[in-house]
Length: 430
Image (cartoon, rainbow, N blue to C red; front, top):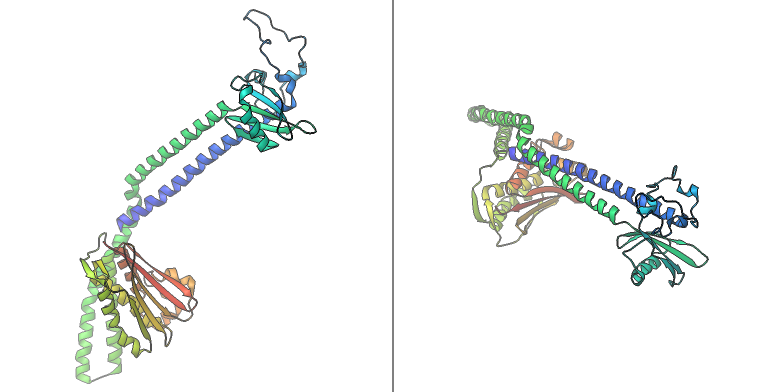
């Protein structure tokens, strides 16, 4: 139980931390991408709206640090064009000299009309064919191609202009941030995992202590009850021999036997709760064991007016605890005998699974509430109808669940039809 609680605590903690780190990493990188992409789009629009600001600038800078520099007389720029105050985006006066881009003008049928490669050195006239094809395929709008962010817009009646802006630095920064953030997230997850593993025992220690005390109480109480129950049952038998058969004595003996069964069930559950329950592992003929156990219920079924149908695959071998497997089959059939609808058919099947076997029991039942199915394996759980009918104590299916889990499997309840309940136990070779 301690290991199960510890593993469950670690799993929940790590799933929570991983979800938070993934969310944080995603928000950070999505936000960064939106910001970078938005700046690139804004810059492209600004270039398309102010083509005169970006003529070739090779003669506009001073030749030496002491040489004065003035705006060329034939410059198309106006003084107010240099004022970037109030503009939205990553703009200042240095923007004019830091942007690397080129433009292509083409007709509606994709024919290149003109190009301006004065602001780029990595692309020449012989290499613009692929860029033109990308722009033509995209049509109007924005896109990425070969490290460039481009913008295609209609510049004339049947002409289009494509501006390709170098985004190498921005994309490199984005990829670096993505790599660093993912690496940091993985590192944090690993660090938290180590801390959680080291501290998990302390975190669940109060729960473990409470569960251990509860288990010890059940075990001690069960053993203490066995002696008085034995004395009561013996005394009732002696009294019956003395006074003869009596319905009150029979009722008392019946209740004593039921109480004895409950005590035995509690002891079994307590043992199954051990970290490693004692199991007698053997290679067995599970087909024969299941059939023999099921056949012992045929007479009971006939007496109650039920039909028992067996579909057992022959020749199956299984490594597990034979006593527990027989007990599991008995629990399922006993449960069916208590709650099967009148004149119903109880079906039991055994089939081979990938790593073990599957035992399935189904029977018709009345007033099935599907919301109760997950609760059937809770200890002492019974539906309101069952509580008033005196059918069992509600611990049998809990034992069946413990047996299935002890064999590295599981047991589930389902309702394939409205008036049918089905229990499916998957057992795996140990």
